[in-house]
Length: 181
Ligand SMILES: [Mg+2]
Image (cartoon, rainbow, N blue to C red; front, top):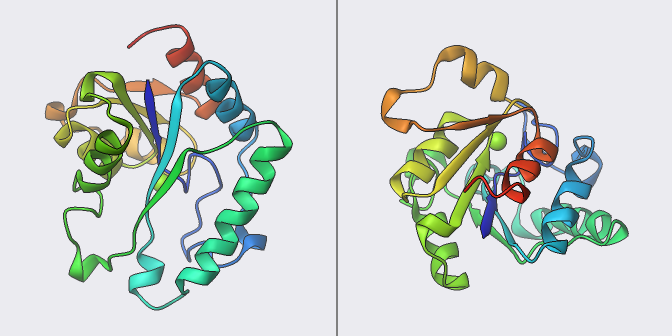
């Protein structure tokens, strides 16, 4: 399958004031190992992340590259890797279809890896992730890390169903490896 991962709140701890440096990128327990397990079973993995901190002028692309360098290095240590990191830098007030809940990044990823929506699953912690996946007709998993608990407590809109609920990326990886999709 093609596994599309939201970043903040799925792989690393979400921060209300944005991850602005490698030091602020704090990994969620077992998340990196979950990515490596999926790699090991032949799945393609790509991050699809809204990074409005670029569009807002809080950090620049070089700083974002150094944050993702830390992510790639940490993954390499557990024999994991990402096949792509796709970014929507748009500020919310200048959002394009690429910024989630728009499906643009997901459609780009499916084209790049030549995968159908039925072969693609998105894992996210926010309703906008799930909205983007619904718009792109992908399978969807909501994790309970990051904003996930609040997202679930607030209630997911009915049109987004079915949504699989996992404790974290580790459990979401198990769903995929069990062949649920
Ligand atoms: Mg998130």
